[in-house]
Image (tube, one colour):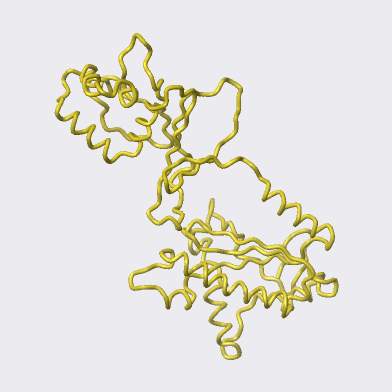
Length: 332
């Protein structure tokens, strides 16, 4: 195991004392089957000579209570899924290599929990030869508890990538990059939540509302031409780790509508808070959705702060007029 233990306390007779470790822990197990001259130990007890499993365990430590060991084995057999997996290996006489990949099973299947660590725990039997790399496998457990391998291919992604590059090759590089994100505070979502429910509890509702609004959004862009005449586009819909959908869209507009000067920027982008007396609804939306922070020295604990600076590069410098940058973001 990849931690330091006190050999006087962590021993085969007295068991392992409680300890705390920080970071990843790796535990390398021995062979699943013992050699002909050795008795089964550790995980081998679940596979080899299971009829005499209790006797083999007690033989390693005669001070164990046989009745208690039998009760513990019964509990593991009934409730521990990993014990079931290891016992299944006993039914396979000619196993040369196997893998057991352990992942958390979320209570809510449509909801993806935030990862608790950057590592994935695996149990590998057989090992690889030095210098031999076989790549990674994706293993999916079906509802019938069967394990299925997903081939490591990128056919669909390659086809879509080539299609997108063909669009760029014919129509030119994209002019506008748009992102639309699902807002869990939308009235259409809040009004249909049951008492005590949170938006992440209703992935079906989130997807349906987002789809409806995204179709309206596309109608504004493609048919009504609110950003100019679109001659080509590509978009993808993704889901955040908490289940909120969002869309990324690339637009290629007609030559007459391309953004090629600060005056055109000012026609579609505004970086001023509107007057409440003139545009009260827009004023409310801007304050609610378009204001970043506060961060910086005013609020150093803001989530956007990294190493004492805002990772979004706020606050932006004030400029009297829009300046078009050279291969960079414009200054509004």
